Length: 469
Image (tube, rainbow, N blue to C red; front, side):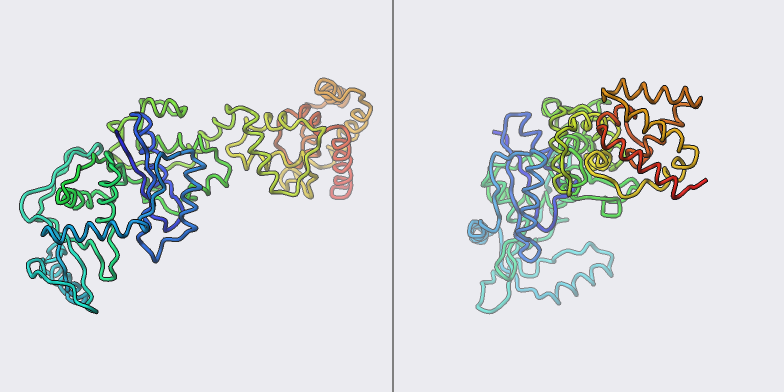
């Protein structure tokens, strides 16, 4: 049984890099009919918080990355880790170390001054020390001093590291808590993890972890270390590039399907294909298709992809998302308004659900001010006559439909001998507050007769006050 795992540390929100790793693990397990495990690595007691745990769970839920096992919490497995540490000591693969912080710092300074790689010198390795009450001691893994560790990485290819390059790492701190490299090995062993997909910032840990697995006579997983995600400027993705937390994108109005589609392309490809359904991602995904070079995050491309999903998703699904956003605002729905039609008109022109909501707010509530640029350009003296004619002509309509409204607008352009823009644009600014909307006859139809006429009258009054002849 193939098993993958996603093992975030709850020291903050789930970032895009972590979400991509989770997606790759999830996709591979689905591809091969295996299992996907969620493990919360919360051994950093000072920085781990329940809020961060919840943020991770919320992000996984929003993305739809359902896990088959977990969430497991490392803080609930301390006894198991201590049991393994004891076993390693008893079989001669670990030892107590009493080296003080001052000694280790002095050693580091000497090595750096001599242009040597900073590493523990094995001072306590053969002393066979035993713990003493009140004396701070750590436990170190006795790394082999001969030979090399080698493994085939699905991204980096063959990786080989000499054991002489690896020092005896700490596996239990002086306060009695296990360290990351020990805990992760025990978890992977106990949970029968067969494939470890993670960021390449962990690649230096892998030889150390493999040696501990060897000491425990445990199965070594297959590894795939994916490159980091960079910003457009080639630097590591951070806040300066915009939102980096997954749920920030949720709040900004991105669709989870679009986010998954974008993330899968940050480090994996299938020819030139850009848009993938979830079933296509699962069917086509392979570890050997993972890219070796770092990927650059491009907000414009994400916006384009999100727009594709907004345009092509079932309309009722988009309507639900829009209503969820509107429910946060002091907005009341007009039962006479064709809500789905409004959303359908605007979803062709926006990149996010939030943009869609902002674009249609004028349909549900009156606006206090006109767009400054639109008003200064359009709501001037030349617009008075067209607007007065529109108010007169539209007020006489018995059938309030698009064709009838268009007929009124067209007749006014002919009567005034002006282009459509001289009539349609003042009408657009009058009823929407800005210069952007779907076809104006559709917009006016959706707003209804009472609202449209009231807003035209308001624009007439605005011009009379602000741009008197």
